[in-house]
Image 1: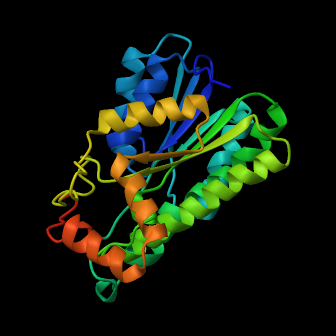
Image 2: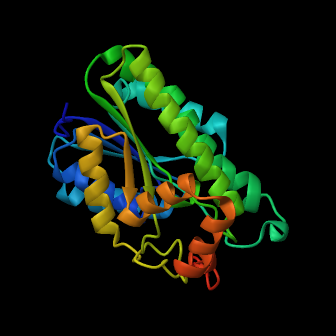
Length: 278
């Protein structure tokens, strides 16, 4: 059951810049009736909204919504307005994410732990909780896309809290998929996306593992968009993420650790991590 973007209502988190903006540009280009941009950075968000309006059709609505995704009450209030104004959405893309690249014992403030877990793991749940009822009731094709990470499948030093947030997101996302199917709500499809490193600036300084190049944002957006439209349940990028999942399931832990560390270099990819400097 392929999803038709034209005339749909699409909400994207983390859409002021980076891949979130690319998803928004794709939604506008394919004729979405309403494109709701959710971000915390008001200035950049409004600039992105203005730029999208330059390419949007006269009937398309570009709606910037400033929300602190670490605040559940702020999410609930903002989504209540979305439902009241537009009747809900047809597509929710949980794209927003944050990362702290340090050893766990070096995590000393709220942003390093609480904020990361709230934005990466809890915000997608709270957003879906507010928007799912109208998706289910509409009885027409709908999509939820959760941008997780390969880090949610393979542990990695200097990513402990980030990895745990993505493990939580993967578990919830795929469980939600099954719950919808089990209850006859198959028109709402859930896609869980598990990419390796992407050149967005968020992971500036990292080194891709063996045979795992740092991917271009446009390449990933194309793959995710196709998966969303087709209702694909799981998307892992690139192919080495599939391989690592299989090896981790088959091999004893010590053997997998040796291969991941000494052969593929996974456990040293964050050694020179800097992240965004601004």
